[in-house]
Image 1 (cartoon, helix red, strand yellow):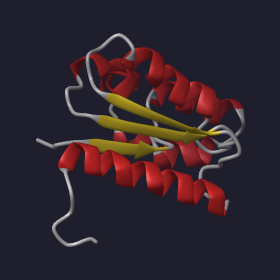
Image 2 (cartoon, rainbow, N blue to C red):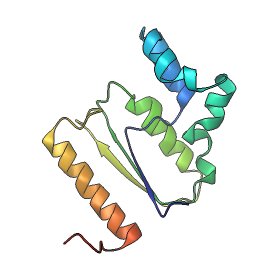
Image 3 (cartoon, rainbow, N blue to C red):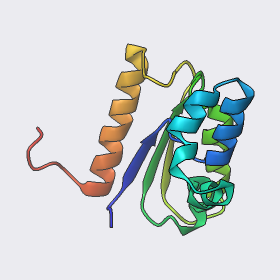
Length: 131
């Protein structure tokens, strides 16, 4: 359906995110932001990208900041990277060592957007409207 896809600080394993948020006392956020969208934990697992990585055929840019306090780098990025390593998809990885969830640092925004620009150019070709 798509020629390529990009993810920045994405949730890759929904049950792991839920467990982490609950362990840190974020019960209300967890209930309204995540859990309410699923019938049960099995559905959360089934819809988690890391658990479906072997089916990915679309080129993917996977980017994450190591200092993300919202979507944990270790619990999400690293899990997805391991899952993608078992498949055949063309994946470009970008880790921002000082990056947070919001790309707060200018250096991180610039690095991400440069990587995204290159990724899109490599997978879609030159833009018809951009210089």
